[in-house]
Length: 316
Length: 181
Image (tube, rainbow over all chains, first blue to last red; front, side, top):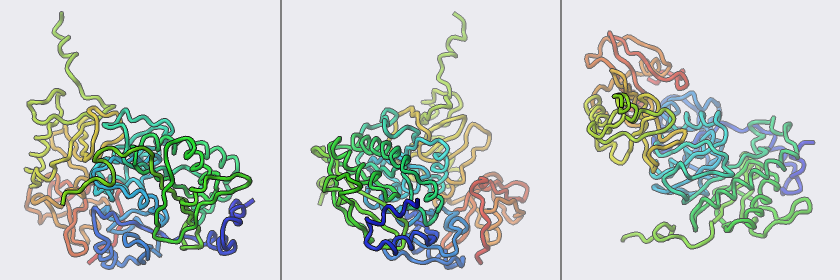
């Protein structure tokens, strides 16, 4: 069975959904703004004769219709990084600030880590963790190429991540861009559809719950945790949120995304989920001509500590 | 008691952890380890990069002579996979900045910078050596730059010897790029 068929009841236009999933995606690069402005990257592309198109909802993204995102001068200078459009969404939802302590729990190969470091203007500390040592070398390579100096790389199982090797024991923000069934990436990697199994969905959902719970525990009261996947499976999305809402002190908060999204679903195959999962965002390929994605923003419960909250007083 | 007992107690370089560089040579406990002061002095002397550029950054050694630059909070020592980015190779006669140190901080360099024309820049990025007898500056490690989008930008580190600029761009970072005239 093609797993995409199981999600047809969730979407507004099943035919458009399936048709979009069959179309390949163009190469996209994100500008590393700590190294160069989007305007300078455009100028360099023009000089070099690299074809590019703007992305309407983000001025730091360019589509490269001829592909080969690594074969140009801006890439060599560390001004750009190949990254699918929807993949920048969790970083936007996380909204990290310079000077903060941020955890990227499943960080390899580093697209989101480097986006986080860029948003922090390379100031503060981003802890990039992954349990796969081989994939960490890709993360290291990307972080160095982009000139990031505020990242610490760790190799732990995120479900029982220890802050012992760090200089602090809680984070201001955490991103769980979880390992998942990945059907949302079918437009660039059609094999994911053939490799899909329901057993894997159930197995990986257990891992996702463990990682998200640990992220909430490791984030300070009042802090932000973002959960994202590239699957449409409610077992790996809303069900994971529902579990963590029950088990940990946190709530799902609404947030605006710069593109069209559908709300999280509260019912799936006989299961029901907490009403607040509707504040999560489902991104379907046919709505914005992108890959598929899921993204939720959580606020960790409890009182924010003095001077560390978002409402910290600013001198006039 | 033998005289050897003392030397066994001296701290040594541990390849499994990151240790913060001592502030000055006088603070040095691990033999052969560069100090922060020496690193800053070297960048100032070799490339004219003002020490103030690195204020706020810390420097760490892991493995023999590999120095990392970091702009966050960390324990000392740190048992992690990486801390910031690789920056400088020490514990050898001629210290060598990494290519990524050159692209990240080379904008601040005022000497031992070699500006390449479009063809030379493409040759350099491909990892190929080239004859450049017109360079009349120092031999040794230079920061190679070229003009892109109206301004000069560092590409990486080259080794200049006997009228030749050797590209030391790491294999994984080499690229065949067009000559942009």
